[in-house]
Image (tube, rainbow, N blue to C red):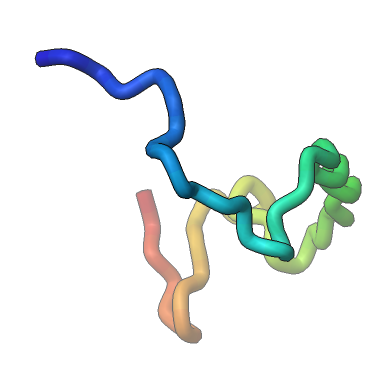
Length: 51
């Protein structure tokens, strides 16, 4: 199958498209109350799931 490597003629880039790189993700905060390794189980919608 032949793959398209160029945009079709008449294509115009939408105004909201940019060439800027995406922002770097922010560091997550660790909440020990919700950590599954604290008690060895997960809590999902108020139900503890043991594994």
